[in-house]
Image 1 (cartoon, rainbow, N blue to C red):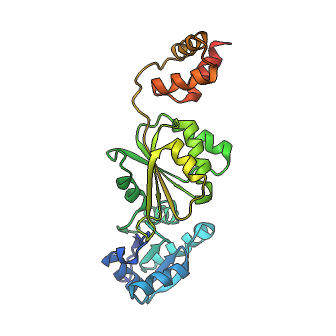
Image 2: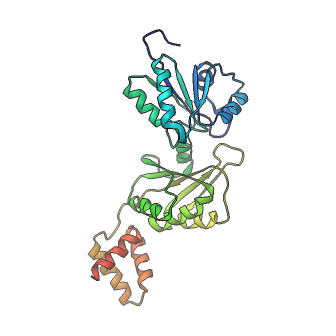
Image 3: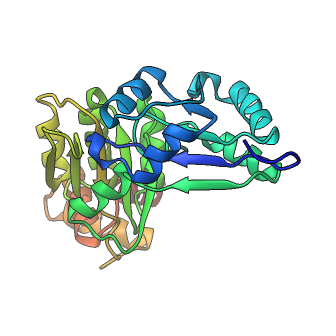
Length: 283
């Protein structure tokens, strides 16, 4: 408890993504001392504290996607009353595809200090293990579940030059990899990182097309997907030039679909861009 007239501190604690021993000493201390702990899953919190040999002394409340908005108001009241609040999600850092962002926004707006207890992150763990460029990257979270929305989101990322990191559910992985192959090209390098830091950790690297075929066999566990950024344009980029190149292949006897695929690959542009150029040229 803080002195009268001061606020508490919002603590965002990074939880292990697999092995309990990856928990930081600061997280262990915060779990034992925090007056209020907001946990994404209170059962997982009990399991984590048991594994760490830590006894909590504060009030534990659930804080997950469905109650995040309402619970944020309650937790902000605790902070304004001078009580520290520790937020812990099931794995990784709160606020990264997990509850936490709304409470941080509310705390900042109210002048409440926010402190991060850094630690395990599936995003950066997968990134550095992928073998893909790490100097520039972006995190895209979970792709949309519906095929149409997913295709539109991926099409918007087709020219993204940075390495991209996604989360995905195992039962949707094959469909997502196939959709990425359509949007980015089947030869785009990628890595599927499964069960990071756990006993059955697996990192599968290869072109999107090959990874999609592999995933069709079924994949289990927590998935983090890393995809290489779009290569620098190496050839034609203007729609008229792309359409003319396809027309030249067609005149040589190459089927249009195959010609579009070849021109897209040779010039480092998505097939959809070449297809649209051909359609526009024929109007």
